[in-house]
Image 1 (tube, rainbow, N blue to C red):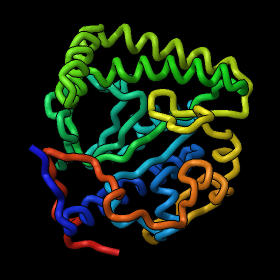
Image 2 (cartoon, rainbow, N blue to C red; image 1 turned 30 degrees about the vertical axis):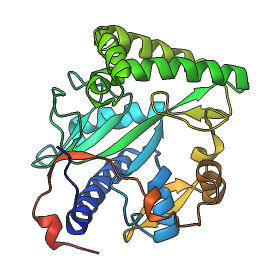
Image 3 (spheres, helix red, strand yellow; image 1 turned 135 degrees about the vertical axis):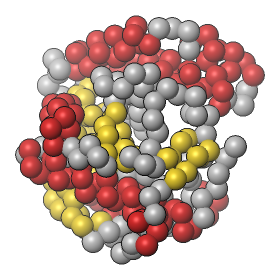
Image 4 (cartoon, rainbow, N blue to C red; image 1 turned 90 degrees about the vertical axis):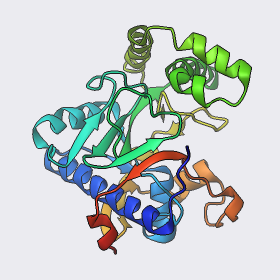
Length: 278
């Protein structure tokens, strides 16, 4: 059953995610790990100096080698009493191609994901960036491979979430493919990217809905500080170029009917985030 968050709950969620983002930043700065706030988080920083008012998530990205450094740093540096890190290498049954930093004693369970076999607290998404071919044909082929792997991983959710009966049947079949095999295919795709010298990158197992099937690498290499909810975080220096590339005319506030949030079935945020604001 879907739970619609009140304005007060949404703000408490945002402040919990900000807390996670600050913990992420603390570890990255201590270990010299380069990262960028991206997508709606960067848009919020530039346009609103904080969260987009209706936004319910936080997105950060790191080049693959930096992502691995962060994952390893979590073992010794993460405050394990308050937070935990998840990705395919450390979480049994995990079906996403990127990591999540989550908060203990909280819940933020996406609709139709209640049956997944791991804890689902409030989180921020941590995306690894991989090189992809410079040529459009090569990027197209990589996009197709990524699509197939992503949909196979998604099948365990899609068999329940899809409204179309045929789609549910197809996802039910795909869900029978052993997770270990799908992860092997993903790891092979990662290994192939390590051989590239390219000006283009993407998050392999996340939709890239643009005609280029990727993003110019330069956006993530040249960084500057951005103010977000009173804190400073690293992000693309050419934020106008990045935001225009991703969103088009990003300065326009979309009408209410186009403001998307994620459907949630379970929600719990520590009380402290209801009594703290910025």
